[in-house]
Amino acid sequence: MKNVLITGGAGFIGSNFIRYLLEQDLDVCIFNLDLLTYAGSLENLTDLPDSDRHHFIKGDICDRELVDKIFTENFISLVVHFAAESHVDRSILGPEEFIRTNIQGTFSLLEAVRKHWQDSNNEIRQDVHFHHISTDEVYGSLAPEEAAFSELTPVAPNSPYAASKAASDHLVRAYYHTYGLPVTITNCSNNYGPNQFPEKLIPLIIINAWEGKPLPIYGDGQQIRDWLYVEDHCRAIWSVIQKGKQGEIYNVGGNNQPTNLEIVNQICSVLDMKLPESQHTPHFELVQHVKDRPGHDRRYAMNIQKIKNDLDWEPAVSLEEGLQKTVTWYLNHPDWIEKIRKQQDYQSWVKNNYQGRDQQ
Ligand code: NAD
Ligand code: DAU
Image (cartoon, rainbow, N blue to C red; front, side, top):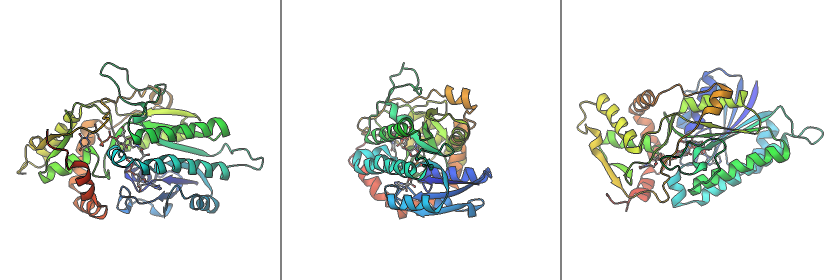
C-alpha cells in the first residue's frame, strides 16, 4: 500500500479526490494535511468509504517542522499538492496570504521532499512522485479569435492568485530540472460539483437563486470559462499520477466554453425545473449586473489533446449532466450550506466583496 500525502484535502477538490481514491478502492493510505482555513472543512470528509485509510492532520504546509515530522513518521512516497488560497476575488482584496501559502508553502513542501526522498548516495529516489495541482489561469486571458491554451502557451498570469500559482508551477518545474525530482503538473480549468465553497460562481448562484437573492454578474457577463465536473478532474489527476511522464505538464478541461450569463441561465433553468412551486421562478430574473472584477480575464479555453492522446483521458460528465448533479447536491445539503456559512464568517466576505459594487 502506498502512503500518500495530500495537502488541502479538506477543501473542495482535495476532499473530492480523497473520496475518489477511497471509492475506487485504490491501494493507498492517505495523510491529509490541511490548515482548515475558511475554505477547508471536516464537513467535506464525513462518510468517507473505508475511512481507516484516511488520517487527518491539521496544520500548515509552510510549517517545515510539521511537514518533516509527517515524512519521518510515515513512509510517504507520493505527494498530491492541492493546498492553496484559491479565490481570485480574495487575492484582489488581500494578496499576502496567496504569496505565503501558494509560493512559500509549495517551496516548503519541495524542500521537505528533497530532504526526505534522498537515497544513500544523496540522489533523489526515482520511485517517488510529487504531483502539483495548478490552474489554466496561469496562461492569462484569450482574445475571441485566439487558439485555446496548450501546454506550450507562455504563462501570463493576471491576478495575484494566478501569479502565485504560476510561481509555484515554476518552482516545481525547477526541482525537476535541477534535482531530478519526479514531478508532474496538471493545469485545470474551472471545477464545479459537490462541496465547493459557496463564494465561487456556481454554488453562489445556486444558493442565492434558491433563496431568492440577487445573482451578481460582474460586468457584462460575457466572460468565458471552461467548466469541468470535479470527479472528471480527480480521474485526470489519478491518470497523470499513474501514467504521466515525469517533468511534464498536462492541461485538463471540460471542452465547453459558455459565457457567465449562459451558465447562470442554465443553472436557473435547472432550478426552475426542480422547484416549479418556488415563488422565485423564473430564477433568471434575479440576475443583477454589478461592478466588474478588476483585471477580469475575458476568456479561458483549454486544449486537452495531450492528455487525451497520451493518457486516454477525456471528460465523461457533460456540462448539462454536471449542473443537474451539482444543483441536486446543494438542494439536498442545506445543513452543509448552513454550517459552512456560519462557521467561516461567510457573511463578512459577502459584505466585503459585494458592498459598494452597485447595481449597473
Ligand atoms: P479550496 O479553496 O476549496 O481548498 C483549499 C484547501 O487548502 C482548504 O481546505 C484550505 O484549508 C487548505 N489550505 C489553505 N492554506 C493552507 C495551508 N497554508 N496549509 C495547509 N492547507 C491549507 O480550493 P480548491 O478549489 O479545492 O482548489 C484546490 C487546488 O486546485 C488549488 O491549488 C487551486 O489552485 C487548484 N485549482 C482549482 C480550480 C477550481 O476551479 N476550484 C481549478 C484549477 C485548479
Ligand atoms: O480557471 C480555474 C480557476 O477557476 C481556479 O484556478 C480558481 O481556483 C477558481 O476559483 C476559478 O476562478 P474564477 O475566478 O474563474 O472562478 P469564480 O467562480 O470566482 O468566477 C467564475 C466567473 O464568474 C468569473 O468570470 C467571475 C464571475 N463571477 C464570479 C462571482 C463570484 C461573477 O460574475 N459574479 C460573482 O459573484
